[in-house]
Length: 237
Image (cartoon, rainbow, N blue to C red; front, side, top):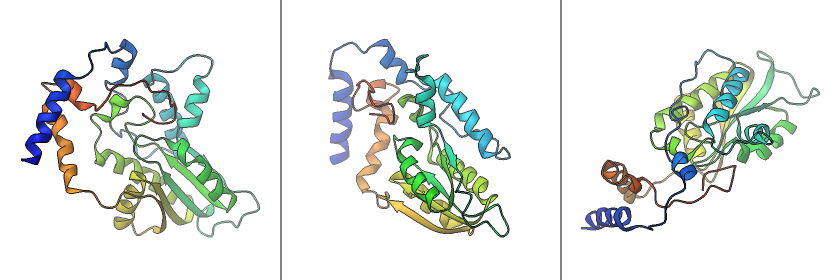
């Protein structure tokens, strides 16, 4: 009975929600860009090339880019890598002794991991931070993304870092923590993980999250709980 009530409420919200007209710019943001819903990066490219390709994709997919600050928006939200100071211990088999891969949370961007990355860099870690598909461009890019796409991005980052360090560590915030755990369970190269507010246990009510997608063919608005302007350039609101 509880699930039928949830379905009814979703339909009710979709049919009788606020009547105000949605701005054209907002409507565009809530549709996929076609460039960031899946992880399509060639696993053989370098992390540096991956960062460059991702920056180019972000410039094309975001709707808030204007000439005077486009570089700033992209620089702050794009994947990044940090090299440890020159006086840090060198690696034995690889270039660096230790390295850590940072994974941001749901709705966030690598920007949220930058301060943490600088901390690890100062403590002699090679740092790499990935961008999860669907993020840092427009909310609509999350509509078709899957957890498998996120794991592909995590695997790519792990492989790239493993090529450069003797000791490999993972770190994630919220959903990024969950992704880090999942990767570590199947990757013997991972020496340890640093978790920040990881999403470990999910309520059984989470099953209801599939309902909006099921009925969205009839009520597109049901895919969104609310329409609002995205004033925070560092995460979806």
